[in-house]
Picture 1 (spheres, rainbow, N blue to C red):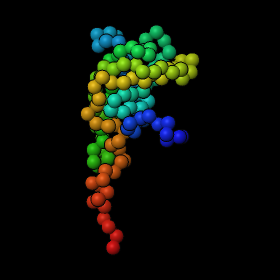
Picture 2 (cartoon, helix red, strand yellow):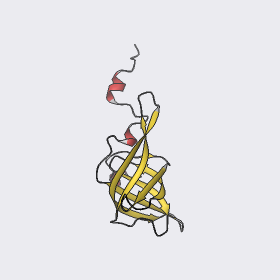
Picture 3 (cartoon, rainbow, N blue to C red):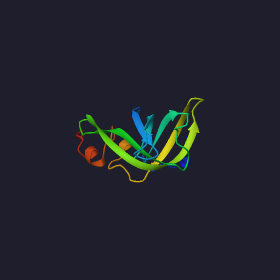
Picture 4 (cartoon, rainbow, N blue to C red):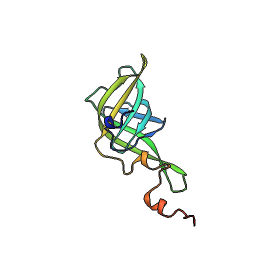
Length: 129
């Protein structure tokens, strides 16, 4: 992959977990499957049917994200976010991949927490003498 073409500002966490979405919170929710997420947006798949969002549409989404602790254990953090659909791509004749940008970012960066060592952690590694 050509690094110069990369437009993402942060790493995304890839995971497969249910996501529920609707045009507004009072509507009947449709289910999709999360593909990846950052603090500012997400991508998920859903069935290519009438309830699938379209570009430019505003939706409300309910989902859970793994939130890792220092010891690599994690809890699922639950969120409800309103956002705008940026892109919809056909995966096949049954599924579409939907990209949505959140109006309010998550309080952490999901793709930059698991397995990444911070500079502070690297400074604490034992030195060989």
